[in-house]
Image 1 (cartoon, rainbow, N blue to C red):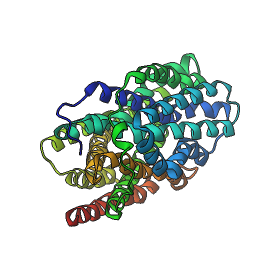
Image 2 (cartoon, rainbow, N blue to C red; image 1 turned 180 degrees about the vertical axis):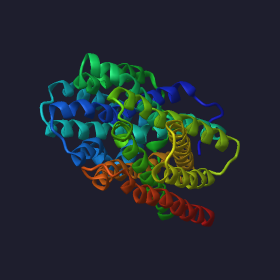
Image 3 (cartoon, helix red, strand yellow; image 1 turned 90 degrees about the horizontal axis):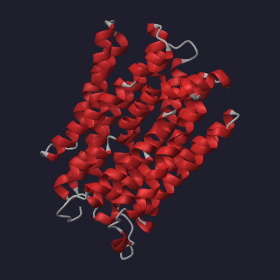
Image 4 (cartoon, rainbow, N blue to C red; image 1 turned 90 degrees about the vertical axis):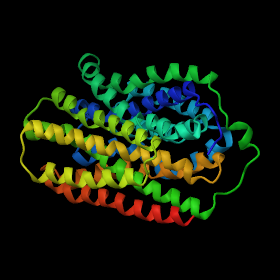
Length: 391
């Protein structure tokens, strides 16, 4: 942990805004796919791979990016990410095939990975220890807040300008952030030059467990977000605009979940409990959603509760990550390992869900998948708590 006496909120908010740009970059595929299918014929499984191909970089480069942040500083890594977002978003205007679309998604995946490692690393160094729960609670909002924005702006952009302009919209967000980042203070540079030691085995093991918890969380969230519009259109015969609007309920209620978890951690609650208890609540909610009949109003309430409990988990993960590191300068490498867990969740979650659904869209087939992921969180947290107590 660092020894700052005052949290530097200006840098934290800029890091958070960069996360918003990255979240819109990864989420825009879900609403855009409804229009892309009109131009490019895509199967259910292809839709899943287009949605998840952005995660390839996380699977193969997560740990390397942690080392990159350690060596050059999270500020420079954030600037690299914003540059890649601008370039890949601009390229979208010239996409004419599914292969080109996937290539653009892979490049965007590198940018998202850079942000997801460097931003929380920088935030941890800009926060005084007693504010870590609050600042990581703010950071944990990046994905749900960006997802909500993506789903809110997408109907207008799709209607008036088309999916290419929705795809390219992130360039207009990233450019001013890149310019503002020039003045951003990076407190890690002086220390990084003096420290170059390997992480200990216990630290690596605990970071891997956190990464696997993140895999279970992000696999649930991204696969739900990918197919929820289709579920609403198929089950309730809604048009695409209304389905997209209702889909925003899930990420919208992740936001208060993030904030509640951050507040509770700030007040002394255990990060372990704030992963285990929400996962247990999710098992009940998913069971009710899939195996019971209910009015539309009850369905909206259950969807909102799902978002709330999902949102508590990543805040606890990010708040615990700096505490796993033995030295503050090791935070970037620990988060690099943790974020590597994001990759398999994004990469495999939507395709597995698509495979289970099949072309007949049998929604009950998803129940064992989500049950396995939530039980996995509970089991992995138990292992992590035991290792942490033995350290």
